Length: 442
Ligand SMILES: Cc1cc2nc3c(=O)[nH]c(=O)nc-3n(C[C@H](O)[C@H](O)[C@H](O)COP(=O)(O)O)c2cc1C
Image (cartoon, rainbow, N blue to C red; front, side, top):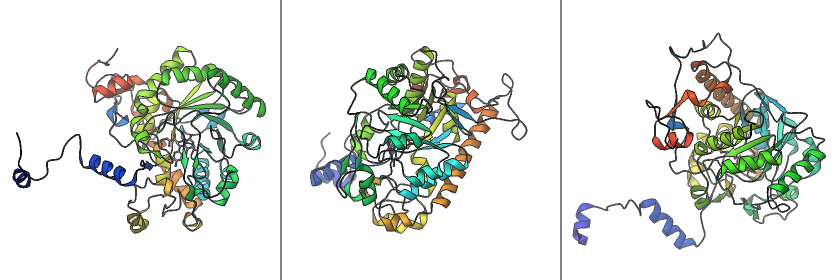
């Protein structure tokens, strides 16, 4: 049917499913500026996720544990395969690596304070280790990244574990970006690069080209740290089954798998939305790889990418993870999006709870900025308490679910406790569609 312009005026604008308003706006923006869109946060498109799974609470065929009377433990040991000093954490929720540069000094300190208050670990990031962060973190994981920004052997020895970063879920195969406005004198000094100039982080380690070199690198790091520190290997979720097998062969104590919903400090929007696989799809691949090598639970699996509440934590553990890591949710918990800054958020085109322009350095709450005035607004002690509260809630929620499934430890949750509410989620998570015994693809 052909419409005249009169018909169209009468019917109103008819939106196209292919060229919807957002698509039109994106084309117009690209045409106007000639540059691609950069932002922080993770994939925003709808994807199969933990919400598509449900727990089968116990009743007759399984026996639940009593909430306030029966213990449900939450402790976890990470890195006891080869390291002399593995990490003993009180809860299976850790803080993911986020760079000093993307985040302010007080924000990094608050992450350490919050994690330590509840007995878990936090992680450095691109740009190195700050003294505040080291000082306030009971368990600090030191990232060894392709960029080597801020990397030095003394800090390796000061850390409690080392995480070799091969990739991130938000941008597997891609590097990072830190725009010039965030390269303050301190950030520049730690990275030994000039102030105020955009910095790109490399997408691959400069001195190795494949899995054999990774073995050598892990051994070097073990020698430098006297075989004490656990060595983690972090990968962005893509060909997870093979990547996990290679990481284990190379000698990792712990494998970290970061799904495509995982946050980033800044990268191209097109990358965040179109590269990688969902967290839900990555976990069973990782677990299968570990099981086939006979090291599931001996090489621990940490999962990240879109973890928001205790149900997400419990579901990741039930699918076979030993612990999870959180980034975006930790920043929100720190107070990043407090409504008292609503007017200022509005001015920069954002809103409390939605701020994702980490790269601009204009964060009114002083968390993802290097502006001295803005970062001075953020109180690391109060922020640390908020984070600790949030981590407690995540843990208690996961315990509640574990007890309901009859488990005396959150890590005793198993795929058998789960069903899926969509065929996609059932196929990816490899659990049955609710009410059936059908696991698509098996
Ligand atoms: C502000 C910010 C900075 C980050 N910086 C790093 C980094 O330096 N190194 C790294 O491996 N991952 C980095 N990440 C990714 C996190 O380590 C983690 O993989 C991700 O945030 C997990 O997903 P979630 O944000 O949904 O919890 C960063 C994430 C955010 C939000």
